[in-house]
Each structure stands twice: as C-alpha cells, then as structure tokens.
Amino acid sequence: MTKILICTVGGSHQPIVSAINEQRPDYVIFICTGKDPATNQSGSSVQITGSGNCIKAQFSDEKPNLPNLPVQSGLNADQFEVCLTLSDDLDQIYLDCSKAIEVAIDRFPNANIIADYTGGTKSMSAGLVMAALEFPSVALQLVSGSRSDLIKVRNGSQYAMPANSEKIRFERLIAPYRQAWTRYAYSEAEAGLRQISAPRNTELRGQFSKFRDLSRAFAEWDNFNHLEAYEIIKQYASSLPPEVNQSIARLNNNTAKREAAQLYDLYLNALRRADQGRYDDAIARVYRLIEWTAQWLLKTHCNMDTSNINEADIPKGMKLTQHREGQWQAGLYDAWQLVKHKTSGDAARFIQAEENCLLNHIKIRNQSILAHGFSPIKAGDWQPLQQWLEQQFIPMLLAETAIVGIKELPTQLPLCWT
Image (cartoon, rainbow, N blue to C red; front, side, top):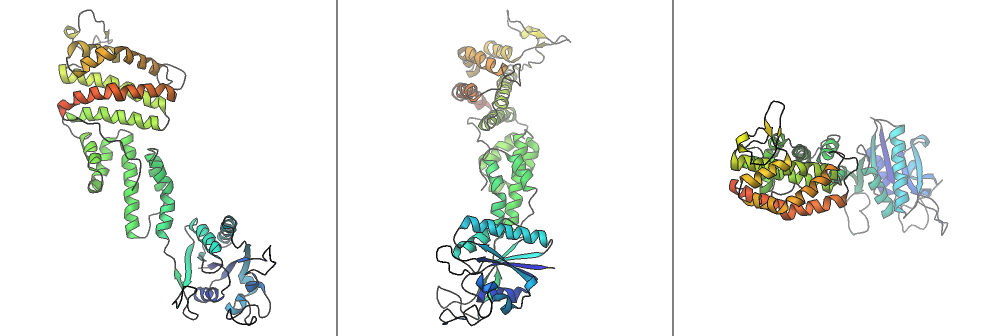
C-alpha cells in the first residue's frame, strides 16, 4: 500500500529524519514556513529546498554542515513537496494542513496517510492535529525518545510512535448527536450514529453501542412505541436512573397503573414538542390528553365507555350524539360534563371550577392547522395553556391517579447523554 507522510517542519531536523527513516514513505508533504514577513529571515522551508549544507547538525554549530532533509532521507525530487504556511496563525495553519490532506487523499486514493506533528511551532503542530482529526483515515504520530531535560529528546534515541487519538476522534464524531439529545431529537441521533463505524477500542465500542441503542430506545419511546423502547432499555437498566426504568415498566405492564402512566407520558410528550417549538403538535397532544383523561375517569369511577354509553346513564337534560348504529357517544366536552355529574372527587371539582378555562383553551386548539383552523399556534398561544396545565390540570390528575399508586409526575426523557 502506498504510504504518505505529512509532517510539520521546525528548527530540529532529527525528528523529521527519524520519521522518514522509520516509515519509508512513498511520498512526503512537508508543512513549512516561508520567510518571516517582519524580519525576512528564512523559515523552515530552507531545510527542504536549501542547496548544499543548509542545516546545522547542532544548534551550537557555527554554520550549517548538513544537506537538506530530502537528501539526508534519500528522497528523490518526485517524492516530496513543500506546503507553506504561517508560523503562528492557527486558523491559516489548520486550513493549509486540511488542504494538504485533501490533496493527498485525492492524489493517492486508498493510501496509508500518516500525519506527524513533532516538528514546527506549537501552532503548526496544533493545526496539523486538528486537521488530521477531521479525516478518520489519517493516522497521527509523533517522534519521541528518552529525555534528559524538558527541551527535547536525546539525539539518537528518537523513534516514531502512533498517537492515541481514537477517543478524541470518537468524541468529535458523536458530538452532534449528544447535541441532538438536548433537543429530544433521539431519532436524529440514532440515524447519525448508524453512519459511524464502531471504534476499535473495546471500551469505546461499548459506549458507542449503548449510545446508539438508547438513542433508538428513546426515539421509540418518543413515538409511543413503548414496548420496543422497553425491550432495549431493560438491557441497560442497571446503568439508568431508577425513575426511567420505573416509567417505561409502568407503560408496559397490564396493571391499573398503565393507562394512568400513559396519560402522563402523553403530557410529557407534549412538553417535548413545545420545547422544540412545535406548538401545533404540542396542543394536539394536550387536546387528546384532556379527552383521554375524562375517558379514563369515567371508566375508572363509573365503568362508562364514552364510545358506547348506555342511554340510562345519560343525565337528564344532557344531549349526546348517536353513532349511525345507534350508540350514544360523548366527545371531549360532553365527557367532562359526565365527569361533573357522575363523579364526586377531585376531577368533578376541577371541571366545576375550570369549565370556562377549559373551553377557552379548546378554542385555541381549534384554530390550529391540525384541528379546524388555518394558522399555526404560536408560543404566546401555548404558554397560557401550559401554565394552566401545570397549575390546575396536572395537580387534579395526580390526585386522581393516586388511587392506582401514581402520586408524582414521572420524569421527563433525558436531555443529555453521559
């Protein structure tokens, strides 16, 4: 396989020679500096293009006594090129190194490309590392050796070694999908992670698998596919907060808690849509929540099904609609009227006090494109409804669901991956 070496060049020639001698590349790209614009002093490019003796064997030598790096390394003229950059402009160095890597990839497809950041200024090393990390196929290395001080390694002890950058690369790759979780965009995270190759490192591979699996689990949960979410989450139950395990378990059991848990899940789902600025979606879910709550209350307290009400159970003076097959049915408002007349608990007291507010909020929902209107719901429309839900509706619901053992609002789905 063709081997390409990209290296930054500074004042010390030994690390560059060591890197070339160890790797024996087919082609070398030297990242160098030209003449300093302020002093007009030669930059590190003279070590590549200088003629005759142009490099000092030791800094203390009075004058240059070694030929340029290609000569020292046995490189032919067609085996190397010089890429000029600035000594301390990190932005420009990064751009120049990125361009050099892109050109190398384009010119030498399927080649083994190694970026050695040992030489050059600190900014040059940083720029090459930053650029190389953007390309998964580019390996990083540095030349090291034994040290007698903090200035440089001892001459003659140099050796090239791979730089361990897999975790850095991994974290850079998954960063956008961590960010997606902060917007509850689990589907986006899961789709993106599927495009990433699993790390070679065993520990990182485990983290990657967990991140991808849980992204999918919460995406399914967010789409109300609770069973699929549960099957994934239970594999990681020991590492998740207890309240997450408890919530998904409630949504998948067949006890009296399940339907009550589904009501809260719908409410939290509506809040997530509002946090995303999707107010029409949020208010559509809230409408269903209010309707479903009345249906659950009537079934729990009176064993009544709003889709098929016995005529004898209809309060005197109350008018309901009939299905074409003759069944008496109650929509949202009528269902709450039945709650008011047929029950005597917190829900009955709630509707007696909040009936007008409920009607006003329903009117806002009816203006939505997802209902009967033609205008999008705005934040100013949603906020009063959310406040009413938090202060009036949810406290009532918690009082009612206490009879099945749910006394606190379940936790929201997570906003961050750890």
